[in-house]
Length: 579
Ligand code: HC1
Ligand code: SF4
Image (cartoon, rainbow, N blue to C red; front, side, top):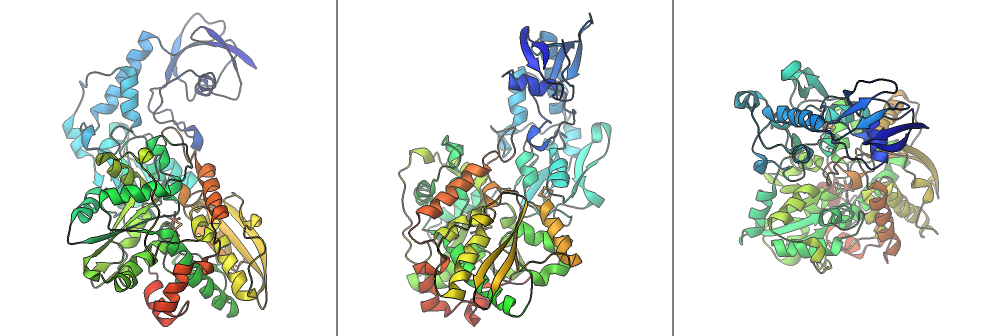
């Protein structure tokens, strides 16, 4: 260990850490903007983490960026001198010279790292603001899911790093130089027509409002206020375990009941559960899979993750025939909310609007797919990310934490099994599918509902599961995050992978850490395992743990669809893909 001092106090240092790491270990705050240790990113560009150092034996001090300067034995570090504060203040003022001034209109207002640092350094003036420079910076509005506003970018390059190194998509690059440096898409393309698949991981790491979802909270509110409309709101498996933090509850708290109460207060007419749709998807996809296996068509890829679908269509269109044709749970709920549900409830389908709350921004792309719009009527009208839902409750002054929980009361499309609940975490779709396929093949349930061998957390996991009957053993794989996914896809295309069924979730962790979830300052995906553990707990405590035992799903088949993969089921619940 090294010995050093920080602000006159002796500390122990390590040769393999930076001054910033050492200060953090000792609870000394140094402001940072571009650095994000969770993704190993320290480009040293923002210069707000400056510290004053004096090295051993030297009588001079100088200023260095603490995020890139290694610890040394005998070094004296000061983090709070007036000169430093002045330099940091100037840095922030320069960043704001070239930055949208209207914080109140920014989706990140109040949750912005740049605002925090400006407060820390005590910035009270903005002498260099240059409206013409800001005006010249582009806003890319092309995507239904993601808006990239260069007027709010501080050029930290975290987005470039996560897209390239984290996801392996590599859509974003640095463009221009000097004062004109900005982030753009490769080949001068727009967000919509580029390699971007709208996974939203770049949004999660952006320290400001430069990257964000297209905000549709107003559209949702208008629908809920309109007395002529019946608004049907569904929320995703992962939303209930990734929302409580916003209201000060511990990460991973299950707030399903409070979300239902909040939605009713907002004016939602009918609250449905996407988990119900997940159970239904298992019936359709499981049946499809057994047919494909019987015909020796392998592998089949899961199809519920829309960023994964974008990835296939944009990057590997040749594997489209391997995608399950079953629509995602969100779309299955949407389409049945405009057909089956109004028939059962005696409502005019034309009055129905469907709003989904999703931990995802690619779901906004999904609802705009032409395959999922019929005679101008979309299956789902609006997708709100978890972040937008939080914003909506803030706007309406609804404090989720203090609400009494409610239960789902729709008798047709809200009950769910434990299998439906675990869709929100990597491996969940696979486990749910295996539970039901086992039953179909053997006529009895698996002895143990939990299939531990599917529950790891590596980016790519393979397993063999004995189903018995004519099928024997199936070889499965589960990927989360697009970097490991790309490797599996390459292996499948090269003929070196031997799988029957492959589950893919584009976001690392699966939906619990989707690109539409709450952002964490200074951290990337800090709550993955807690949220996942809560989903497994929901599954464990459900009276019914297999999708085929969901009585509301059984009633749908009995009263409306006939059987899984029937003609009517195909018409309503299956889709196709196109590049
Ligand atoms: Fe997901 Fe899905 S699990 S895609 O991750 O299949 O978003 O939670 O809603 O549709 O059910 C997301 C989550 C979600 C769908 C389901
Ligand atoms: Fe890259 Fe995903 Fe961001 Fe698109 S949304 S730029 S694919 S990280």
